[in-house]
Amino acid sequence: MRMIRSGTNTVMAWAVALVLALPAMAAGKPNLRDLPEIDDRMLWVALAIEISDRCPTIEARTMRGLNYLWNIRSQAQALGYSTAEIKAYVDSDAEKARMRTRGEAYVRTHGLNPKKDADLCKLGQAEIAKGSQIGAFLRLK
Image (cartoon, rainbow, N blue to C red):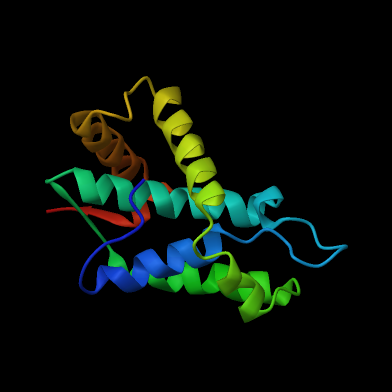
């Protein structure tokens, strides 16, 4: 899933990367990727971004996504992660690759091919129709 976007979506991409890469630095803290309440929520945002990037009939609800991401970031900080710790992992290639793998697996569980834009459009339309959290970040153009 592409993490770099241009224009106003750059902020969203930065925020996604910011919270995606949150393994714990200090002893005693679990990696946030091991906390479903963080990691699953990040997966939903990452999938919505990928769908909106690759499907010409669907667009992101950017402000809704940004608000959601800042809430996840606040939750991570409430768990004891400093801004410096979070920022240190913004560029974590390992976390980005792991989230991509999770996202592709999610697409496959719906009988779709994550490499096909048309299949991502189908997934996006289905998520919007069922009112899922992924669908809440998307709208038909």
